[in-house]
Image 1 (cartoon, rainbow, N blue to C red):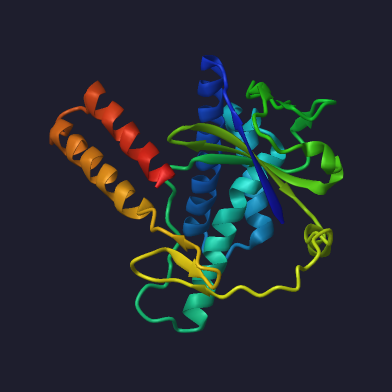
Image 2 (cartoon, helix red, strand yellow):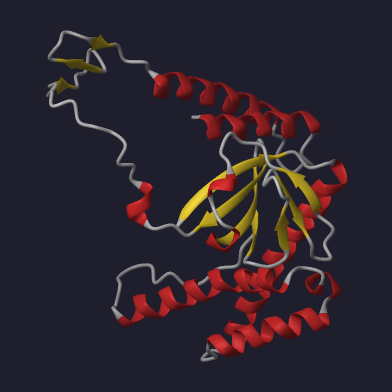
Length: 253
C-alpha cells in the first residue's frame, strides 16, 4: 500500500468538527473493547454487530460514516488477536493485553464518506459530522491515480496541524522506474567519523550534525516546559504554548 500525505488548513469550525470525529472513533474503539472484556469469547462478527448497535444508541456515533466506525473497530480486533497469539505461543513477560486508547489522533474512512473534486486538489467529507470541504496542499498530484485505487482516506492530527493521507493500492513493479540508464562506472564510498562520506574521486562531505543540533533544541524546549509546569495546578496558557513548540520540534527532529 502506497501512502500519499497532504497538508490541510481547516477553518476554526472545521477544527472542532475534525476533533469530534477523532474522538468518536476513539469512543467506538474503546466501547468495543469494553464489550469484549465483559463478554470474553465473542468473535469478530459479534463485535461488528455491537458497533452497529452503538450507532443506534448514540447520535454522535450515527453521524460518523459507517465505514469510519468499522475502521475504528479494526485496531481492537488486531489487539485481541495479538493477545491470543501471544498467550498461545507462551510469550514471556508481557502478553499484550488490549488497552483503552486515551489520545487517538486520526479517523479513517474507506471507500465511502468522501469525494475528490474534478481537479483532485480538494476533498469533501460527506458524512453528518460536517467536516465538508478541505483543500489539499502538496506538490504531489492525485491525477496519476484512479479513484478506485484509493482504498483508505485518513485525517491525521499532529502538533503542527492536520493532514489527509491517501492509501493507494499499486503494483510494486510499476513503482520502480525503468527510465534510468546505468553509467557503467563504479565509485567507492567510505563513511567515517570525521566526515560524513568520502568517495574514490576525492570528494568529501562534512558531517552536518543534524542530530546533535536537534538534540540541543529539544533539551532547551524541555527545560522551558519544566519551568512552566506546576504540579497539582491547571496547565497555564504559557505552558501549553511551550509544550506545543516542544511537540513541533519532535516532528522536525
